[in-house]
Image (cartoon, rainbow, N blue to C red; front, top):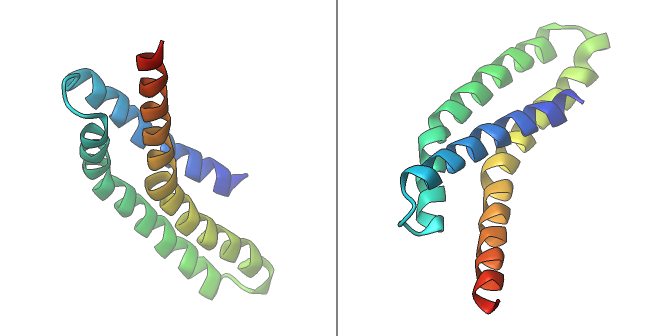
Amino acid sequence: MTVIGYSINDTVVVFDRIREYLGLYPKRDTGEVMNMAINSTLSRTFNTSISTFAVLLVIFILGGEVIRGFSFALLLGVVVGTYSSICIATPVALDTFKKLAQQGKKR
């Protein structure tokens, strides 16, 4: 649940920035606006992920045998969550926007 929550939080931040930029730049191409939004949240996302990863790595190394499996799962979750919010969720949203625009033109 923690890993899913982490990924969802990152995705919500990126999507909120996309929503904000779509309002600010309505005449620009949707792909360009999404690229600008990702670029503006990239440093925040990486800083958060790296700091969380560093703490989890210390817990993994120094925490003892009991907590090692849980911290390893969280380490993988941080990496996968960061990757999914930037490299998977946003392109899926862009494809969805394009399909909705094509359906709107057909009608």
